[in-house]
Length: 321
Image (cartoon, rainbow, N blue to C red):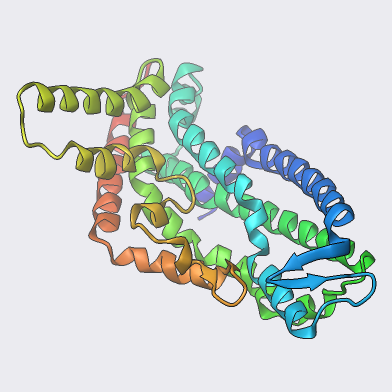
């Protein structure tokens, strides 16, 4: 356990820019932009706005209590949606980290130093998997929660200045406090769906002698092109679209949060609260775990585990030193 903890710390300090500074800087930019946008929107539109069909004159009449409750409930349940760009950045970070995790140590020959220590290849690979599918998402979830709360309270403050006090409603809503924990609850789903991509990227990372990105992306794309050409040329009844969807894309986009909803064709109507017409984390959590009933989720996970096992084996002799 102490060895794994030390290895995870090593991964954090060696990739601190990707693990810490990238999400913090991105969150700061998003917060500034959304703060300016919400203030501008309030100045231009809040004096006479239409919300859910109700005409609002904030400075004079306020808004009906039931409408205020609906707005507050929707904001409390879906405020994490403003951090969506951060989770796209998380997908890119995990992709690049997994692709370079074993390749870089061979390129700069630091693998010679690490192999001189009493560390097994299994523990080293497991630490990199843990850093990619657990540590990175946890850091991004923490930053996203802080960002979302800051933006939520900035918007609530702007509305308060305009005469609409949503703070009592926000603080009384359980969704405000539950949403970060519900987001954490998505981590097992994310890890499971990410396994085939993580396995493929780390297998390429430990195998490729150069241009790891070209191998990781080029092989699936070239395979698709060849299959399409053969199918059209020889008039074969091959289901190339299935290969594209279930093999090629699963091998490249599984590290992007929420991809499981698109893979299982979960509609937006299943994610929103019908009363507020806003995203609801409870519905997102329910729909996400519902995707685990799909055989493709588990088949992909098993394929990912197989590729990771091959990665451990390859690292034992893949040494350019």
